[in-house]
Length: 244
Length: 112
Image (tube, rainbow over all chains, first blue to last red; front, side, top):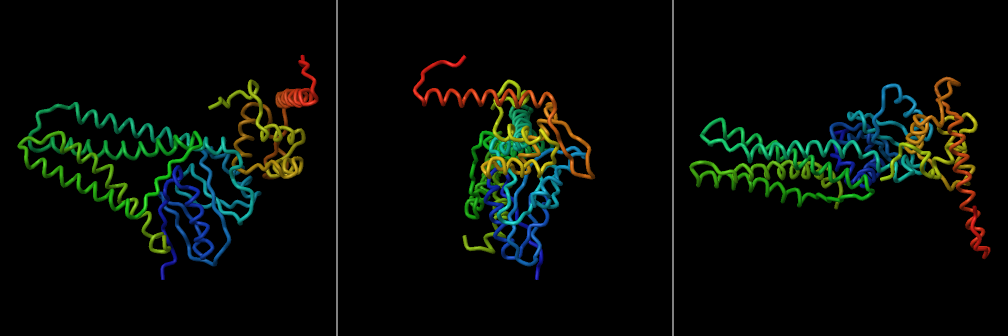
């Protein structure tokens, strides 16, 4: 019988309240959130506890961390191990004072994510421009690969960076983008991505010299496929455990 | 978004105002929260993240300073600059109350 569960985070900029509520419900059933690693909440099977969870995104210097944790502890918020240096998770008994009591200050914690997202997005746009403007005579061999690679990187950066920027940016103005990426929508996205890939091969078969359309299609695929896979992985354990 | 750098040019939020008041006497984090909670009769709650952020901001601005007392618990106290700031804020809020009282009493006199 497994005693660990890995639940994928839906992205703190998007559905953090929902995630924390899910973690609370799991705790009531004996699955306690004990570690955050690489975007996953790792739950340990223990006795049921009425715990609530919360987080704070803050960059701390080495000598500030002790005071920071002390203050939280004195309220009853215990720190949870996290692989992200700047994302601090906490567990507390149901009913204690929330970690954030000021909306404006709570909003500012997404500033870092916004700038990172913007940097990735711009990098992706640069990659895409390189791909479109590098008008080299396309021959068989290396050149194909350059375009494929640039396209894949551009797609991932534009998609990932764009989503981060959008999500964090909205949180900074106290709004929220709720994606509600469920199992079916993820599967559809994955299907669209695979469709783009297949279409790109069909197009390349019809033309002796490959067209830019082929690489654009593959770029779109590299935006859709990861999101589709993430959506399916993310939702699968929860889908398996509960009736939606 | 308002610039948070200089507090002197802006009005203080309730949370900042009360934290400054609580630090007329040397206090540490949780004690600040309890003091503010008691004084406002449970109306103003300061969560740990909010409290920590504001304490750091006030410390960096020179309005409060850390005092080294006791073992681990870091305590803070108001500086002269901080006292000036809270006194200015007090005057501002007093004026607001006065305006309100005048208008609602029916006097349309101007306050100079």
